[in-house]
Length: 124
Image (cartoon, rainbow, N blue to C red; front, side, top):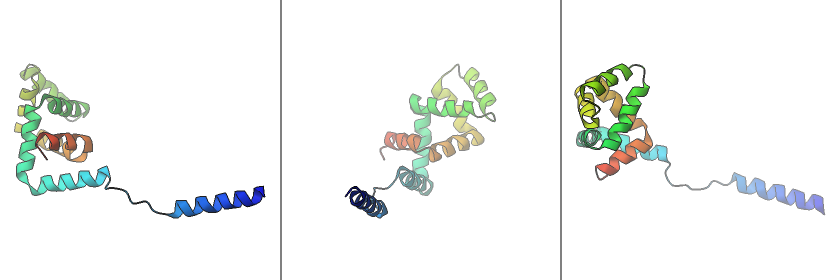
């Protein structure tokens, strides 16, 4: 009897594990859609850049990201000194530098949490 129950249990688990479960779009798919929307709509990218300058929390996250990169940390430290620690001042300088601006925008596009936060700030 125990063997029969064991076989039935294995059969049931095998059947249920073979079924596919319909799930809502993953975060990665949503991130890809948002990135695509941003590339297709230059106004959206401009709005996100403006929020990087205006929103201290988003700007601080971007500065931390740039500080963590060996290629950009020295430049961010210079900007920090020049702007006396002002997040909006640093981010304005970052956006004026094409290399730094591209690095920040790539980070936003490739980071689902940051992209979602930025999209919420611009009302998307």
